[in-house]
Image 1 (spheres, rainbow, N blue to C red):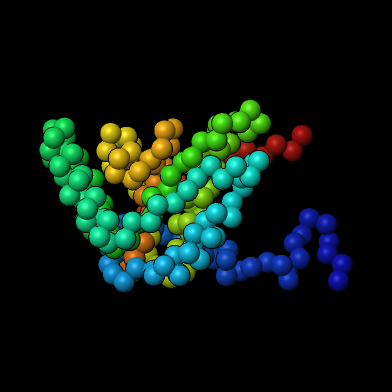
Image 2 (image 1 turned 180 degrees about the horizontal axis):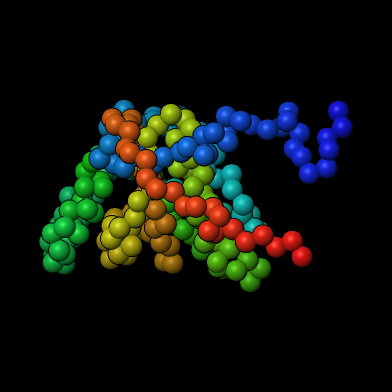
Amino acid sequence: MDIPPGTVNPARRDAAALTFLATRRSRPPKLLAAPAPDRAALREILTIAARVPDHGKLEPWRFVVLEKPALERLADEAAVFAATHLLPEEVAAKGVSQFAQSPLCVALIAVPRPTEKVPAIEQTLSVGAAGMQLLNAALAAGWGASWLTGWVAHDLRFAAPALGLAEGEWVAGLIHIGTETAVPPERPRPDPDTLITWASA
């Protein structure tokens, strides 16, 4: 079959995937409950998450899976850290609740690789791609999921010992996964016409 220039082969168009991407919606931890994916199901999701652009095949990311006992431990440690460092109550609560409410969490760890061939920004972009791929894979598999950060991710005084970070590593995201208990309302989305510039010459 001859395909006219400028058109796509209809046999290659994945309508279901396009519909999913056009309608995907994160589910915050407060709307997630057990059960969460078991290790076999999560391995499939993480295998997909690692299938991202990665200039130089550096794998500048890794995953730390936080199952419920680890999440309970981290909630306690976050509460102690917040009290010790006199964090505002509202700020502290947001960090603690991430761990306390979540049925399962995957910490996405950035692992910068020292090399002159691949700029640091390209490695960081690969980390972000892995996070988005992980989130979408979890949603596509039928789970509720969301990507959060906050002080428990960004403050290395807490995150480094809590998550076993090596020198130079940092937390790119905390991806919470579980069974959704409610569907959050849709939120306003960007108007693509305000974001697109067409350069035809």
